Length: 115
Ligand code: AMP
Figure 1 (cartoon, rainbow, N blue to C red):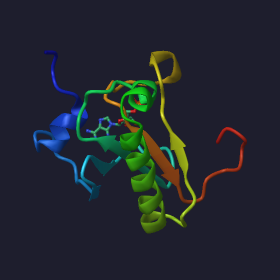
Figure 2 (cartoon, rainbow, N blue to C red):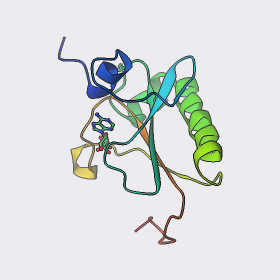
Figure 3 (cartoon, helix red, strand yellow):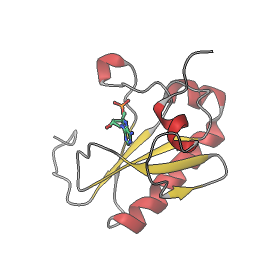
Figure 4 (spheres, protein in one colour):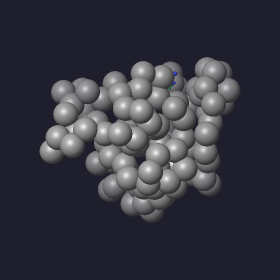
């Protein structure tokens, strides 16, 4: 078994971070290097799935739980609108291989891909 992911270690309290919301199977934290006025991460408690493709194939209900958590967080922390980003693969910028969604909100620019 390889070393636990940074997010598992946060969930266990081994790395300091505030868990700002939680559902049965998922939790949310603030991204340590925010790319938008509101930049949160929603993360399954299990690190079983590396990326959103594996998650969608293996547990679509958990994917829906992440989307629901992102929606409530955007209502609480921004104006309700948000961008949901799953970097998938190193070439797309994924650095943590424990699936997570970036929830971006609050004064986003209007470029078609978010630029
Ligand atoms: P990705 O590049 O899509 O895999 O996203 C990983 C994200 O995790 C990056 O945006 C990092 O800034 C964020 N990150 C890494 N370590 C921490 C941490 N200790 N607390 C909060 N966010 C983190």
